[in-house]
Length: 371
Image (cartoon, rainbow, N blue to C red; front, side, top):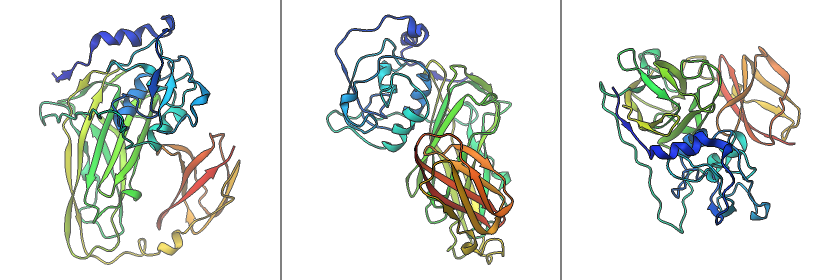
């Protein structure tokens, strides 16, 4: 039913044979951490290929390369495995520890996002737009949005993939971009959540990331990690946005899903139709629930932190969410009080984002977690 773009199917053998193949003895490779596809640029397609190599193992890199996560040339021994695009799987081992996994290999994709090699011509990723009514569609369910939003209003839209008439077949990884007018939405306040159970995520064997590229665009990537693809249709996640507060007059603006790429577990691509939704903003005065921005100031101590945080704000905190650097929630609390102390789970050291949700809105604080 759907058009699938076959990507070097013979190379799938490299994945299926896994660790039974004897180690290669060949000239060392040059790896740029984050550039999993080895095309010279780091983007959300690299995150999809990270999912294709997930949990595979191979020879670690020489620690003499310097910072193993920086976007610099790193010498690496070739792995006995090949990704579907023909790239050696050593490129998926972004931190060089000999195993492809989430935080330590996905983090270089995030921090090096948009980096481009200057020593070789960059091979740009090709995004072929699907046809509505022929290919499965990725779309926002705008029916969840109020008819007219006020400046400063927060709103959420379910993200739906496929329909009963055109379901999705063999989903393993999905990447896309969300585009909008920065006069109405600030990319820094937008967030995506794929953590709830869905037909695409019945078992929590998935990871995802999203990243603000500029004031008009956010890139998103989602991939399974267990080498099992899924078929179905319906909600796979949600997106939250906040209307900019200083908008005057009636306005209508678009939120667009573009540059969609879907892969199955063998790296074959299925065409997907994007989406455009129209959001209406009215000039109504801010409600009492939207005004008190001062009450949303959150105090967090200590910062940097090791094992616990003390949080306070004037408005009662309904929910606290700790997000990692790739935009995934790692812990939730429901204090329902103005002041609370929370114990931190065991997490890798690094930068995290603490979000506070209350009836008055949301507040954010960057948190540095130490070992």
